[in-house]
Image: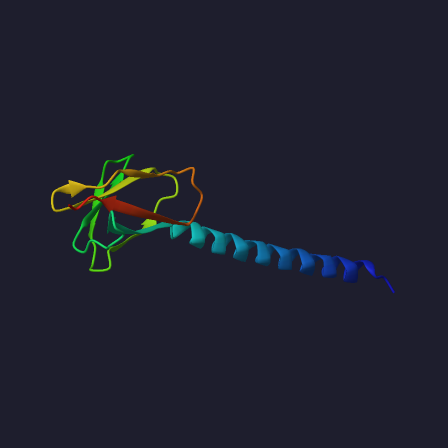
Length: 122
């Protein structure tokens, strides 16, 4: 009895199985990358109290497009689905006062970035 066809068929099955696993892994990786990064944070005064109704500005440094977010009473803001390959600047304004500007760098490989923005709200 010749075992070569059986071995060849078994090897072909293993190769096909590895190709399916590899393809599934690549699709999952692409999905994770396509969802982008998440920028979250809080807008606080110097005493760590949340500043509800502050406006957070997010600037795409490549296109100069600006997104805004009006925070709720808890001071929390959220910008989902940011490109991991672009630098962003973020700052907040409240009653005519502005926080320092912070940068979200494309070289920072965290999927979720959390930045607290402080405003002196005397």
